[in-house]
Every structure is written in C-alpha cells, then in structure tokens.
Length: 460
Ligand SMILES: [Zn+2]
View: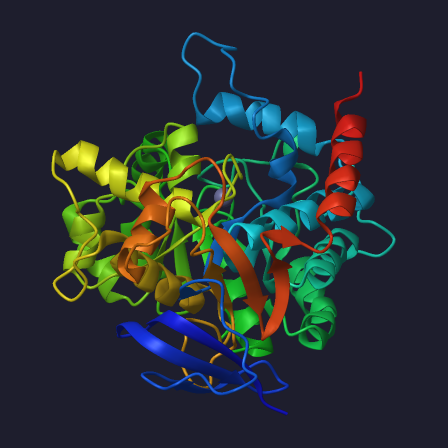
C-alpha cells in the first residue's frame, strides 16, 4: 500500500521544492517525491513546509532528569568537572524503571522538538554497587523499550569505560556502574543485537574517551564489534576539555584527535563527539577521515567547554551533526541557533553557516546536520529522498512566526525568530505520525512518569 502527503513546500536534499507529493510504502520508506505536481484528489495537505527529521547524534538520556539542577555556584570556578561530580551523585541512585521513565519522556520531547532519531551513548550498566543486574542488559533494554514506545528511531551505543584517566588509572567508586571488561562488553553486544534488530534499531559501540579506554582495549573492542557488524557505528568523546588535551599530551606526546587518527581505523563509521579542541592539522585530518563531528552546542555552552571552529571544519569538507547530549535543551532548532550564534560571536560576522549553494543559514545548516547526523546513526535515514526512511517534520504555516512568509523564511523564523512556542505541527518517523498538532500521543502520561521518577531520585 502507498501512503501519501502533499506539501506546498518541501526541503529536498537539493533545496526547496514546490508542490511536492510525498509517497512511501508500508515499510516506511519513500517511494516517490514528485515536485511541481498538482495535488491529487483525496491526498492530505501538510499544515506547512515539510523538512527532513533531524537525527540527534548524542544523548545521555538519564541526564535529562537533572537538567536545570546544576545552575548554581558550588565552587569558585565551576567547570565541567564540578558538573560531573553532581552527575555521578545522581547516577548512583538510578534504577531501570527510572531510566525507562526518563528516556520515554525525553524521547517524546525530542520528537515534539523535531528529532526523529537518537543515538544513545549509554554508560550506566550495573546496579548502584557496581554489580551486573540479573539481566546484564537491563538498563540497555529500558532504553530500547522507551524508544519503541515513543516511536523514535534508535541507535544504541553501549559505552566501554575502564579507567579514570590516561595511563590506565584505576576507576574510582563513582564510576563503578560504568565499568566493563572488553569481553563483557562484547557479550553485551551479542546479547543486544537481536533486540535491536527486532525494532529496527542499530547497535554500535562507544569507547567513552581516550582517558577511559586504554589502547589495547580500544583495539580489541573495535575488532570485536567488527566481527559482529563490520559497518556498525563507533562514537567517542574526543577533545571536550582543554585539561583532557593536556593530559593526553602528557601521556602520549600527542593530542587526542591526533592520537586517535594514528592508532584507530577512523573512517565514516566514526563520530567524534566534542572534537572541540583541535589543532589545524587535526581539523584537516579528522575531516578527511570521513568521520562525523558530533556537535552539541547547548551542552558545550552549558558546560563551558569552548567553541568548535565550524568554518575550518567545513573548509575541509567535514561532515557534522547535532546532539543534545546532557539535554540542557531538547530542541533541534535551538542547537542550530546556538551553533550559528557561537560562530558569529567568535568571528564577529553574520550568516556564517550559509553556503554558496544555500544562502539561507537555517536551510544550509538543516540539510548538512541531517546528512551528517544520519551517517552517525548508521541507519537508513537522512532527508527526503527515495529509498530513505520517511522521517520528516511538518512546520505550522499558521504559527505567528511563520504566517505569510516564503518557505525558506519560515524555516529561518522557526530557528531564529522563536515566539516562545514551537512552530512544529507534525513529526513522522518511518511514515508514521508520532506528533500531531505539536503533541506526542504519550505526552501527558510520559510527563507524569518522568516527574515521579525525578522526585524519587531527588529524595533525601
Ligand atoms: Zn556525552
């Protein structure tokens, strides 16, 4: 059976098109995108411009539950490291039912905010004492259930975490829920593969960072993953903090990205999350490796990480995508806004994200972030194109910010002229409408469960 929707305007990979008939099959894949065609009788008209769904390439779901709770001064110079201490205290109490409730609400929020898939960088594996659960995959399965329930596309990236610093420093007590041997990680992946396949999720691996994974373990884990799935995605936190860069140089004589490119088979499967602090040669070589740069503008701003040199990365043809990471914000448009604004502030220039092909910043950034983000998911998503999964967002042309404007300006207004309410009307994943009139079907139920879980975690 063929399913259809008609859009007065749609953002195709080559740019905006008018009068587009979108068709997809029962498997949720586009079979046709016909532009400049009259609307056939009986075909529903979209409420506004149709844009591709945004993949969210970096998420730690449980962190949504304490977003907003670390915005007070605890030390003279609060930093990423003081934030992390609070995060560890919170993580220590989390049980599988909390994880599922928090993730289900978060994924409903993501869908309402224009994200159609998410890569979950999942590092809480064991119980509060660091012992494996009776079902060693309990917390991973809680995330998979939350994704299935809400309908968001899913890439599960179990995190390998073994040491507390460069040079194989032993983990400390706050990290006991994260720790796995390489063999235990590979067993977990084998165990999770059928569950992921059953719901169309992709399974990959996330070596946490070079400070948390020694060289031998990194090599063995990547080899083990390749034996399970030769093209599976591999994500790593790489150069988020200047202290991390200095520690890496002290340990190896090389900067983190430089070291990784020299010692790991970095290619298009890889996503370098927070490649914030790179030298000029690192920008060039990392971009040329084919890896995706995982940018998380609101989290990087929230944590005071630093500013990625977006123009330099693009000048080398680097792929990139967006993540909401710690979920200080869950809004694809806000990530685009802050990415562009950080570059404007750093360069004292406007419209940095525009390109020769796309003078509209929001259009140019959306198309690139969708393409790079899709690559990082390892799934068949990534724009309004025949054969791709039908993941798309319908903007509300009647919203006060958008009404009466040409389509490229509607998207600009959605990103740059917020009127305090979302201009998203519908969100479709694999051809199924998960958000209608701006709301996810599970909105109220998931919100209540989230608030109850957070209250439990904050008790005492
Ligand atoms: Zn992260």
